[in-house]
Length: 332
Length: 250
Image 1 (spheres, rainbow over the protein chains, first blue to last red):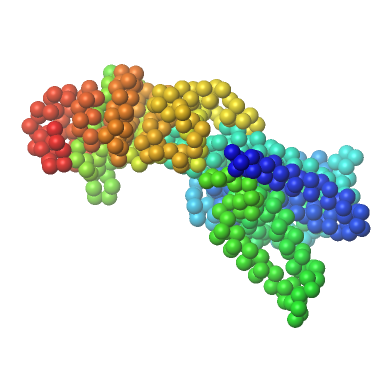
Image 2 (cartoon, rainbow over the protein chains, first blue to last red):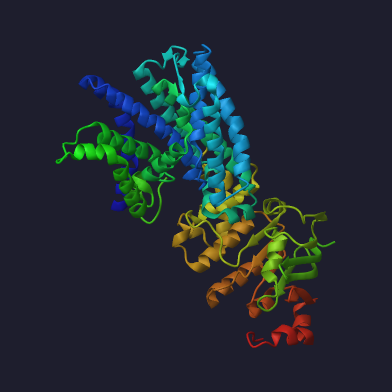
């Protein structure tokens, strides 16, 4: 039973460590005077949130969406365009973003789910590209140059223009999402989704109208990405078509796979590792000999590519998944 | 009126006629075996009845209602449950979770996002009861990938029973089983007989003759004979077409 105790311990320790590190980061950043770390922390949580959203369908539902950056864009542009017209209420930003996103996700999801496998991937990608070019065409809102955000979202007393407030709002949203995700995965809806991933044919034969549930999962996952988009706009004070570019959708998939497909905490670990490595390799001097720093700054993506290859080949359930995996099984 | 019937049912795969203007009646409470040589269209018939394959022509009537156009899940909810020739279970889940999913399918919608499934007694209790019926209760919390082949077959039957079906479509439930495992399935089916209408596709002739109230013989997609076990055993036409073949011993 020693194995089991060990497993239970890592199962609680690993998430607790992640949560504690994120909760205390601003304190450490202010104490050391390096508030830039707080910005990096916010960015990690924003992308962790988006990846957690994608993970709902990718990790638990085995639906590979190559177009989830679209919803990041909907969130960001909702803030940018409303601010452009002088609306600073965060509640209006949020309500608008979620409403538009729900409508888009229902229609797009219904179309995409008529296909499976590679066709599903291609259609999600096509929709995201459509919105990408739509945003470029919005000349009134900056076109391909994007739109500066002068007024950031204000939720009652919480003003997201304050970096620490933004950090803790992102933290709270991320934590609530993860808790909700954990509950969902073990509730009827989650068991159903995982069942479809494991054996779709059997699910139909048991009497589940599978597509209906997958559509709802798709919409929920889009809504989480939309919230991430809203926070991202507040972080960068900017909305740009590039938020919806296909490589961003690809990066979200990478974050999920790196951290661990089908684990609730995985996307957070994936986003953390990815962004910390990106920052370390591109912005900080590593003190490599023979001008290695400059070389690394230029070729950091190649280095991260190798990491992805290694994780994908040797850890089926990603960095976090491998850490807490039960013997002979997978962990969620 | 019969519980389930097919009328002039046709299934064409390109130029191959897998089901050739088939007329069959399945009665409530009756165990109806479908036998025939390989390629006779037995599994195709099961797929047509369950809705996994669309039929080319003809109609399928269940409880007086035409279900020919209904998708698989709608038929399953109306009471047409099936097992597969190649075991089809959820290998990543525990045995209990497998059956819980089957119970869940019958208990309203699954838009429940917060309450843990495993704490839901309205799901877990009927699931455990079904596992007990097929003799797998002691393995309830074992992951399916750790179960033996025969246990997976039993689990699949527990899942179909948990769907509260009116008719069970069993596609070779004894395929690949040892003598002893087969016997336990035969015992199980003897107990279930009468409670459900059962359509049994099976190659094990001892089992078929021990279980069936009625037997239909398919050859090249056509039904060449339907009758009681004695009638079929003594029919010269059946002997010539099938039972006389070297693969079977009577």
